Amino acid sequence: MPRTIVVTGGGTGIGRATAARFATAGDRVTILGRRPDVLARTADALGATAVVCDASDPAAVTAALPQLPDHVDVLVNCAGGNTDIGAPDPTTLAGVAAAWQANLDANLLSAVLVTTALTDRLASGGAVIQIGSIAADRGAASSYGAAKAALARWNVQLATDLGARDITANVVSCGYIEDTEFFGPGPNPRRDLLIDQTLVKRPGTPEHVAATIEFLAGPGGRQITAQVVNLNGGAWTTR
Image (cartoon, rainbow, N blue to C red; front, side):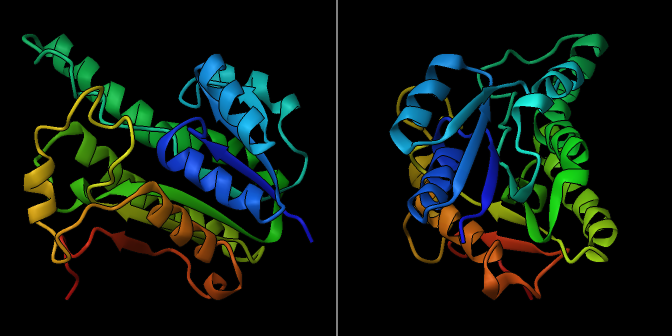
């Protein structure tokens, strides 16, 4: 039976690959994103529904609600990224505050807002999945890493709150993933270093992440909740 899937940040990269995987399986997919042209092209290619929305903006999320499904089986919060990349280093306290707020908005608040807005629409037996980052554990003491660490902590409370409704909530914590817009346009100058940090000596791909999300949202993932699933080729290991 087809499920109803909502993917934020669904126009490119991990979000697009995730939306494609669910659409190929015959599910009904709605993708959210800020760029109308990018979102429309992806929706046309996948047979998905596009909803233009900045997931970090409360007013935008509220305005988008009438366009979103009344019943949601799987919510995937992919919207985000390191807003420090390509930005000048702040030189004032106001600049530091703005830089930190930008990463918190993009990576934490976006997931909190969309999930909160759709909580009453989440179906029993469903799943909420967040995209985390290796930076929460081994990254520099940056606002991006802090935001992803906060996302993982919040996810534990979310899983607690949703558990009684048989809804799971997990984080897929990604290492280096190629073919995304994370590092901006052009070649990634850190590519070789990031690949060398893995044990498998290869980068991850959006399809690797999408397959993990599909598992967590499927029958095999029903007993997994409040967890961080590391997907990094061994660049960050567990005990």
